[in-house]
Amino acid sequence: MGLGVKLEFEQELLDELAQLPITELEPNSVILLEQAYIKEIPILLDGIIKVRKNDESGKEIILYKIEPGESCILSLTSLLNNKYCNAEAFVETRSKVIFIPSETVKIWINKYDSWRQYVFKLFYERFDELLGLIDLIAFKQVDMRLLKKLKEHQQIEGDSIKITHQELAKEIGTAREVISRLLKQLERRNIVKLGRSTIKIIKGL
Image (cartoon, rainbow, N blue to C red):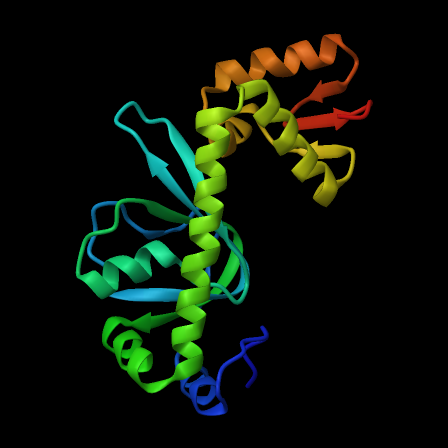
């Protein structure tokens, strides 16, 4: 049975992966707990998983998104260094995942060139994403970050974006009240039309 996602691994490694069970996950399932030691890492076959960081007040920020064919670099780093993970991963949409045990992960690093290249590529891509997130948080005003995020959603969903103010705030890394205030300003300028869990773009962002 195929994995249903393209992975550029040696056939022997693909055969090993195909021997591992596929786990189906429901939306909002938490697969990686903050402050927990990692005993296995996921490879996502279908769906979307997001990694978030929570603070003591309950606020959270989305660090990055895991898409089909990818794994979680934070869990991988924690596993290889035998350290607890300092973030949490949750399932956004119904997903299918293969969980790879820690000993298997370590064996594959020594055994397969393609697995090492896969891990290094993940490191680079996630580090690059996190640098972009730091740039947004530290150097861009919240209103500019909001417009950028709305444009990203518009490219995927079109002019009618299904998202709550709270979800937008998490993605940008600010308070819901701030996002609601800024969206109201955009609505008064006839740039967006706000609905229940929906933002309609009516003028170019």
